Length: 269
Figure: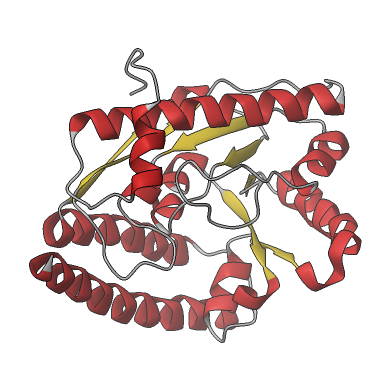
């Protein structure tokens, strides 16, 4: 564990320094361009993703696999993903083409970072408004779709620990009802390796899987049932596969017991 703490600390130092530098650089470009999306800004963002994954692989020993990109439809859509870790952003962005993340207002208020995010069609969500934040979010999402973006949302609103009881919120339902576009569910297992609020990162294979799109026009309750059911089932499959492959991290009794109850099934990647 001391060695993994050293590797994790080195990753965080390099990751945070690079992220701060690129946020200032991209934010400055965004300010000079009047907040518009620029080709060089997106190139730098793609570099940030690739270099961060490289640091995870060669410093921490955490490799990345993403499958199911063929399930993303060619036109406008919503990508609705499980959320366990900061790694999830790296997994989702490259396949989305022109992504428009829904992000909490606090992130958008960070100097330079917020300017950079706005230039990439990021949609602000002011959670202090409660349900009153949803109409503004829906209208910003509609505008982003018209610009050719794909909406990316974490339906639970925050990072969740592996096997934690799901807590899907209303925002995704309002987007589905109002926008009339397919929704692509995404399952992942990243919380086993980069847990929320954890200073230790662990080697292994973080996996994300884009599932077949749910078509528009379903009854809201049917959509909610399908979305949660499909994401949670596939996520459990990915967690179970990682456990069977062997984990180097320590597991508390509750998590180990939960992982052991996941039945063996076909590989999901």
